[in-house]
Image (cartoon, rainbow, N blue to C red; front, side, top):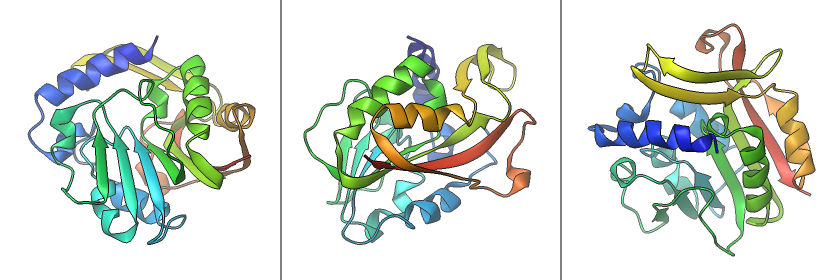
Length: 212
């Protein structure tokens, strides 16, 4: 499975983790306040969230005191050590495809992680976690997507000085995948200012969908 390559990359990163920012691929680019503000458009003080691939908590540390509960799924303890210790934050150090719970949430967030799964894996994840949404609950998927076509990066990265895998699926493809796996009322948001998009073949979007 292609996600195994990404897991190896982030495992290596976690071993040299000395600050919350070290989870960022571009250390000088932290847009998590925008992410946090966007999430809060769909959540309030009564909302229970499931955040998948949380990393060092750069986003949830900004919203934990504005919601009822955040359940975190993040494989690496060295990352979750930076998450604020709070009674309403539950941390699960486990891979996304291995986590299992019957609990249902108002909102599921996947920020900056779905491009580390190929299309087959993405289908499995969306289908798996649809059962964890309450009726009319929402899912938010934010990351880079291909503008005109799928953009696959699979090889050594000079910028990261490491092997790097990403599958930036065409932005028109992801809503179709979500629809096929149990979601409806799918909307695409151009979440960041234009200058925050570094590459001419990919673009950051947030996709919001409801449980069908």
